Structures are given as C-alpha cells and as structure tokens.
Image (cartoon, rainbow, N blue to C red; front, top):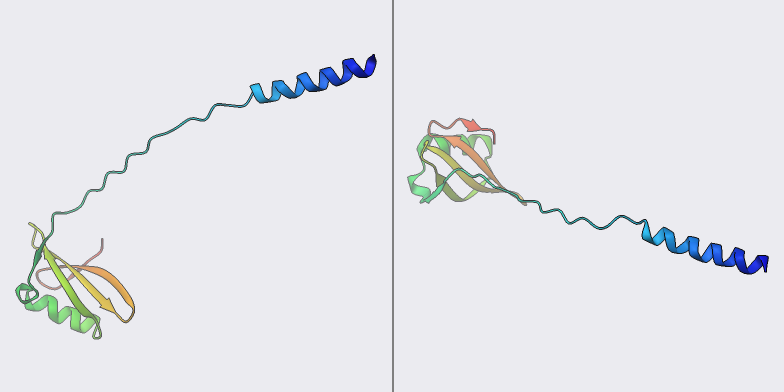
Length: 98
C-alpha cells in the first residue's frame, strides 16, 4: 500500500514539473537600415584625384562600380586579389572611414 501511494506521489509530482514550464515568448525584432543615397555613375565620371589615390593606395585594385551621393562623396566597389569590398572617398581623393 505504501508503494502505491509513493508511486502515485512520484507520478503526480512529475506532472507538476510540466505545468511549471514557462511559455514561449515570441519577440519581434525590426531592423532598420539607414544608407546614404548613392547613385551609380560611370567610371569615366570619377574625379581624377580619386583614381590617382586608388592607384597609389591599391595598385592592383580593379574598380568595378562607382557611386556618388548628394554630399559629393564617392563609393567605390573594388576587387583586390580575391577580396571584394567598398571604399569611400571625397572628391579630392581623401579616404573616408565608414
């Protein structure tokens, strides 16, 4: 008889652990991306100081695309070896850290 009460208490105690689990809470995360409005330009429209600075800093770089924003800042899509990335420069050829 003791065994019957003991086993019933263990079984009922096991059920209460399931009842105490916390419910799953779904959180919604919104990501807002703010970008400067760059418009694509022809590579020929790139100012000479920028192309000279690019040749000096990265002699083996291949320029694939160029962009310009309203503040006369330029974004350059370049490939150096097997690495692809973007560089930012002012119209006078000084590099911008972004």
